[in-house]
Length: 142
Image 1 (cartoon, rainbow, N blue to C red):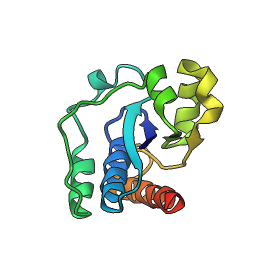
Image 2: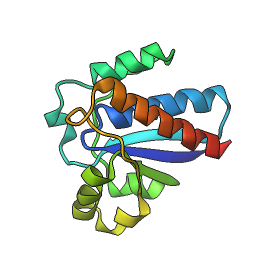
Image 3: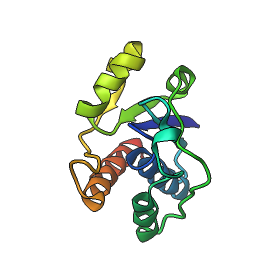
Image 4: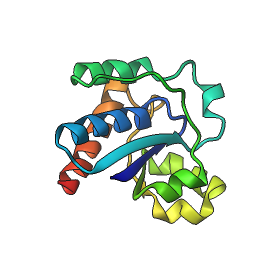
């Protein structure tokens, strides 16, 4: 089983959606991959008003994904990066600088998407964009 690691700023909205959607499809299709997600900005838990975004839970529910809100946001560690066969950050303009600051050796090993957060898009538009990218990744793994 190989691991794909989804990163966003707070491990609360985009990366959690990507992780759970990816795992749902991968399980359904018996793909030998599992997704995890983490925050690139340290101390994610203290910035978020709960374990997972209500928008993420609703979007997953609408797609028939049994969403899990059991864990709180987690900061990425060097061990997480080493364990992953593939690492994807949600938005290059937002996440490349964080990677450069906190994990400079990993900055150019991360794939960067261009999926906006709630400061630049509606929840629906942001998560629809993440879904398109997750499904592209899954198609490439089949």
